[in-house]
Length: 388
Image 1: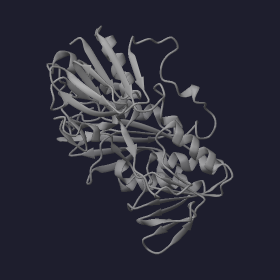
Image 2 (image 1 turned 60 degrees about the vertical axis):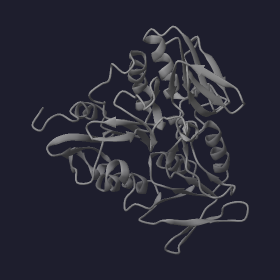
Image 3 (image 1 turned 180 degrees about the vertical axis):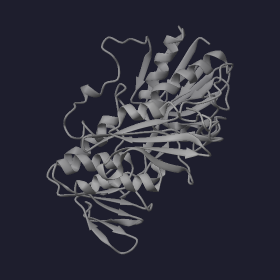
């Protein structure tokens, strides 16, 4: 293989490019990115950058003087992938890139609400964060739709700015998808302690306002006044451009445990990739920083070896969140029916460590301001029952 194209220029794409060079690939390397920016760090967008504590320059992921000897094609999206004597990637400007191997790292885009109403935001890019920050200045009321981690972090920043904040969640408890209802409810107390109003089990009917949002309508008839709305209702993988390519797509690009797709010479990483997880027996997209940083090395090994190097297991996904000065850490997968126990601290103090077990195995761990204990328990994930 004498040429590789990495389609996607965020963390996963940059990590793949670095892994290619680190693993000895010396051929032509092209990096395609839909955004005009060089790779930047996204987690601070909902925290320090939104709060005005970081600049755009602070978000840069590349080291000073780092040179991957790559051709960068930024500000142009991929529109198609064709198989032939080589792999051909069509670009939105009418040009194309041909390569012997392709790394798909096109990420995901936020799901939207509001049909273009001013004051309604999503948070995925630098531009999104800058627009939200500008709207929060001078606003009095923020409504966050969706009680996930990004929405929770924005709520923290907005409270620090003095806004009245309401979080609306359709599920019975916040963070329930990631943490389960019991621990999601426990973590919600942290927000209530800081004056955030949480409304759970309530679906959103629509938004009100002429030109600019002024309220959120709930299905039960309630109306919430709002100067600014953040839609934190998840993201969809950017895979439309693969239609007709032969790459199998479900909820993301379907991959094996090494990142290989249904097309030889094509691997996928990051938020757009649904890798097979043997521990779950299912394909799953992992939309976390650590997955985008670490899995590309495995995918590159798969690509360069022609699929001969495929791992039997995957490291459990890991995420962290900073809320009201506390570090929240979570690793693993939860399923309905998992047993949850608080091993250290207590829920009332908002500083605790909880462990999830399934058939005697430790499958997930949640820590709030428990970094040492969390690290110790994280190592036990998916150990056999009775192992220590």
